[in-house]
Image 1 (cartoon, one colour):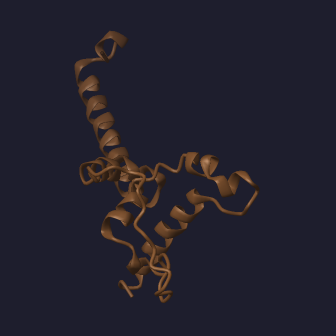
Image 2: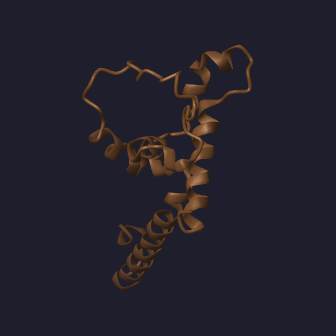
Length: 131
């Protein structure tokens, strides 16, 4: 390809080496960049799909209203590993917020921001040593 531009074989080989190192550097930088961005879903989504539940979806577990000591999740440790993986598989597209009935009525509830906040909190806890 470089010889078609009128460059000599030695120059073409040198340019090929330079471009190969530039390409490798870009790949390595992107590899380090991925875990801190929304691009993490490219790796988490296939793993999440592999571990998906084969049971019918849309069925919620009953809530024990007689035992009010714990409703929902108040800490990251209250989530299962699969629920945390679901968060990392999020593509941050915002469709969940667009379809959320509470968000549609003007309430300040955005499922996407909740998932993003959870991921940020998990990273902060990880930096603190998993407290």
